[in-house]
Length: 429
Image (cartoon, rainbow, N blue to C red):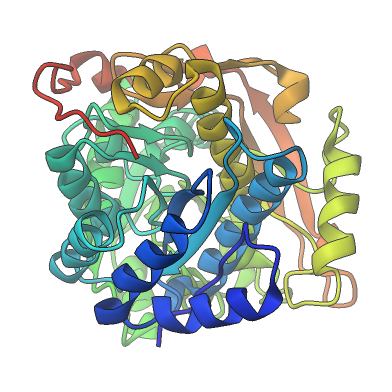
């Protein structure tokens, strides 16, 4: 049964009943309709859609927590436009076809106002296509395939995570800079994120004087990580560019002899806290992040304190950049609705396309801005590494460098084509 969570009602009993009803797709619409009709100012319903089982389960939890923290802040201040924010959670699974059906049901039956989440880039692509068909705004909080802001971009979709192209542009330059021989092996997951990330890396490898000497493509289920490493070892290379996501990273790096990193540079386009913290003894090479709990940036200590007061007793007792991204993306959506003075999608889209955020607001080192051409947030990115510390894993992350948005920008986003507003159906939840 998908995990459900509901906010915005004062009575605990009503919350429990609504949570149970929303887990049953056939019953959810009539129940929501009955309760909305009884309220003078009906809530704004936002669907949080993430795969809650399998290799992205912890990512889904971290993402939901960020969205919850943002919504709670707005609800404590009276909501938005005098309306409380109601969060419903659905698990779209990892099958793009099934995820599209979930999006269709949420829009046509549950009558949600907005969708956010995804985590998996294939899920994000399929669900956002359904949202575009109906004119529903989709906030991609944490799917980092470069294709999300190019081939799979939409007028109604806004991407708030940095992509693997942003990270790899800097990581590959860093890894190749001091290598007299610049042979690069691609190690890629056979899914939307892996294929898109590897494709985005190739021009940067050439730009920095490198040569791709081979590619090992890995099943998304990764049944044999030791066999994968044997394939990698059979191809002489100076740099291994890794596009492996979720728990697959833990499975892979748990099998690697750390001494190999003294001979080869291994770079991973993105490593989430949910792939580090649960496996504190597993080594990691160079990778990209957008934020960490121990950043010395304004607002970070306060945000971490609020998080730990609420979630400090749980498995993820420190927040990572998945939670950080979901928190700020949700705040951006709710602020855009507030500025627009309406939930009318065209007006909210206009506000999101003009979105800017100061470095202090983002707890980063640079201001961030939404690219109106690609609907991808341009933000600070960071080069990091991981030191296995089993007693205090939260201290294992070390930041090696900072990259401002303009230096990490993905060139192909200049060619992104979005549907026009005229082609985007009106939708006012």
